[in-house]
Image 1: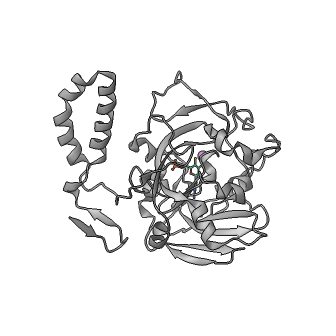
Image 2: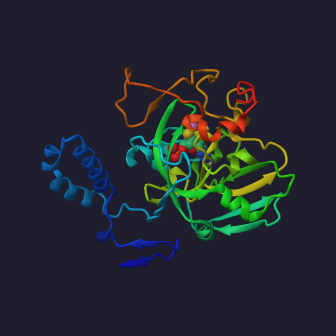
Image 3: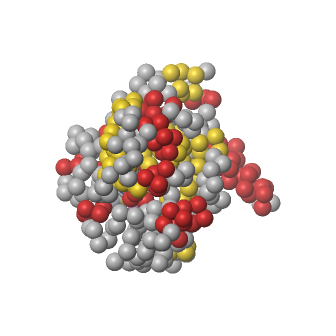
Length: 333
Ligand SMILES: Nc1nc2c(c(=O)[nH]1)N[C@H]1C(S)=C(S)[C@@H](COP(=O)(O)O)O[C@H]1N2
Ligand SMILES: [Mo]
């Protein structure tokens, strides 16, 4: 049975028909164990855990947003997906606080309906899109991307959305549109830290037109088969997998096509530390720390935690390297 919720128009299956996330994750883990032949012990505790997970997840589900497995080259990283719990409790979303745990605690005040995204600037077809129409504009795809923060941690997340290029083609940029700027919500009533001076609000980001048009640049509405949790940038964010996480602006309200390189939140805050391009680059250190390695969130931590080598363009060099051919990446960091 499907019920239509009045506030967001998305279809929610009633809870008895959906698989709670914890159960789904355990099943996935079990399948992995079976592949390695270590399933016996795991099976023993299975029934009890499933029952427990059912109660733990009661009422905690977000609206489903399934996406077909994307076949865009580079869209399926073959690494262990970060646990949902980690991906939704270790966040950067400064509008809700600067501590990693703050967004999960505070972002429940964000109102994601009604929500509109204005497409404006140097385009032949500017317009205001209601979020439901924007979601339906193209087919949803699931893409498993790495997300690496400039701070030196990373995750692997199954995002749901479609290539930003789909929207860009529809609005028909004019010849002089060279950059795309993303402006996010800055609402002091629902975002407790927008009153602070940590950043110059609204948080804004930008991409060069060819970066924005690259098929890997994802206009993102969901993750793990559901709509985005507020703390991860609901109802719509960008994910640019080869750039440091801060290029992936959350809770977007304006997409603006401009001629000149737009200012960006982190570049305004500290220009010597955060450049416009911000491509993941193990060879260009942050002025205060190395970018050569990273810690995968969810892996055993502590002082002796194993760090991974950071890959050029976050491992997407084959797909995006040509965008920067001939550019001095130390100068354009
Ligand atoms: N509006 C907004 N978007 C934002 C941020 C922010 O503070 N505000 N932080 C950025 C940073 S620094 C990172 S690493 C990613 C984190 O995304 P996640 O919390 O979903 O992992 O969001 C980016 N987008
Ligand atoms: Mo970040």
